[in-house]
Image (cartoon, rainbow, N blue to C red; front, side, top):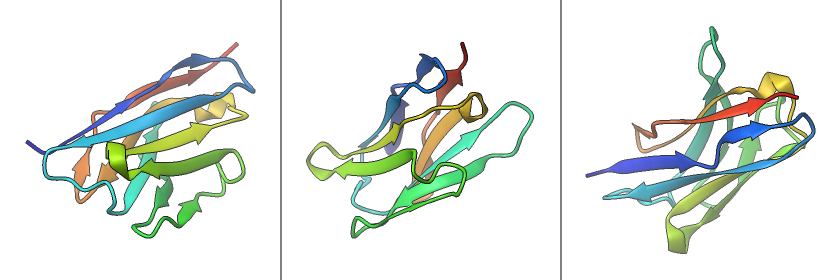
Length: 111
């Protein structure tokens, strides 16, 4: 069974940090391009960044300089390090690769 599982979400104060994980199982090679997306309440799902197969990373302007995507191929896992979090970063965060989406993990930024 092909599956992506996100974890690491939670409640954090403004200015804080979280690291999300996206673990792949089944017939998915995490070395393929992996994208991160988020969906805030009442809003459309938004692309926030990706890591290409060769390791290059790309980010939306809204998170550039604060978020970092990395990958551990040995663990078949991709990470999203989020720093300097803002209330507007509150959303469900999803990873996606090869047409497969994870179930999402909630991130809430609030004091």
